Amino acid sequence: LLKHLRNALRELELGKEDVAELRGLVSGTLRFGSTHVFSQRLVSTALSVFTAKYPDIHIVMKLGTSTDIEQAILERDIDLGLAFLPPDSEDIEYEALFSDEVVLVVSKKHPLAGTAELPIRQLNGLPCALPSTGFSTRRLLDKHFAREKISPKILLEINDIPALLTLVERGSMGTLVSRRAVEDRSELSVISITGARLLREAGILKHRSVYLSTAARAFVESICGTH
Image 1: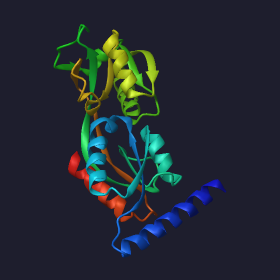
Image 2 (image 1 turned 60 degrees about the vertical axis):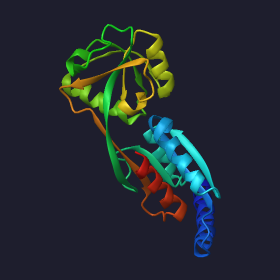
Image 3 (image 1 turned 90 degrees about the vertical axis):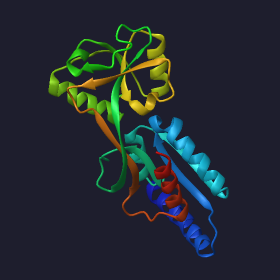
Image 4 (image 1 turned 180 degrees about the vertical axis):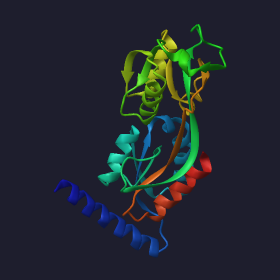
């Protein structure tokens, strides 16, 4: 019942926004979700541009894993999501934006610091802290580990990427995350992995049955113009 009530309330909100659009007004509420890896630079930049252009639009922001974002879309908790592809549900459609490489990240004091590339097989037995299994990057890694029969020494799993990178910076463990996650972390050493295609494609997600308001479409344009 709660699910149906949420859908009904959101439809009422969208109806009021449609009327406002007909009157030439750009207002209403935009509910947007993003994975943590995109929140630091891409989303924050897009939001600053968007709010300056459309100050009358109220934004509700949700952060989580790709799985969290997809679930929020299915439950009509958010209108749009920025996450890694592909979504698990056929009820979610998407527009691909860009690809991102998964890299090995270590502290400047780590024995591998300064290395440009590392074959994937050398991850076997490497002490690591990794994103939790709810992250799409972790699912990609687990698939490649199984295929290559590789077993890193996983000492810790955590569902917070900034906290994960801080742990790596202060300790002796490595981690494997999206390159975009370390764009602003000059204190870390980034190493490309060879011998495997560790690429993630990111995109804008929405429910197939949901009509996007002018506000939502304008925000998609902001994201596309920022990445």
